[in-house]
Image 1: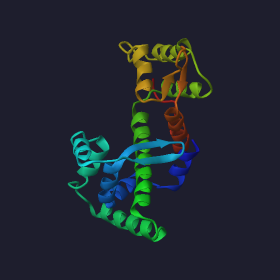
Image 2: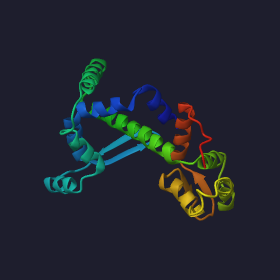
Image 3: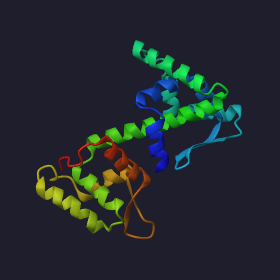
Image 4: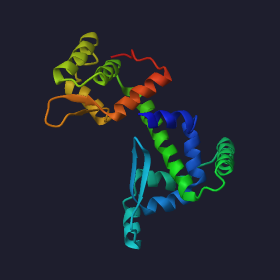
Length: 218
């Protein structure tokens, strides 16, 4: 989790900065992404692995365009406001001034890390809008140790008892399924235990840092 705290604290103050940075360097980013065979985000930060690309492989990759590449391609037609232009120029100047001897590959690596950070911010914001207070409490319980299904169901039953109307057609499977779909929890292979994931821990870290209320409805 240390990598997340370092990135969030030191890389960029606002997610929009990362998006503008991607716009500034979209051409070198696009060239590098087409040469990548592996891109990962983990405890060691962003990892890039170059592949042995061919013209055929590139064309096939373009036809199976990923959301990330579609996003980068869409920047070409995106309207640019004066505020974005101002921030864009500031990022461009700061990046080159602070690392005058750094090549484009190293700069792209940092920008991809910024994009990964932006995605984490976005995912946390969207999830917070939809998650129930009882599900946050469930995550807090899992952060202290693995649980059996009946232990987790107690959170569901308590919330359903307090909100019978809202839970009338909302099953425990759906309740737990939301946390599984966000990849905040997982099952331990070969057991009945549920555990919190690194993504779930990151969400709780973000929640604490953001000082948002956890006693949400339901």
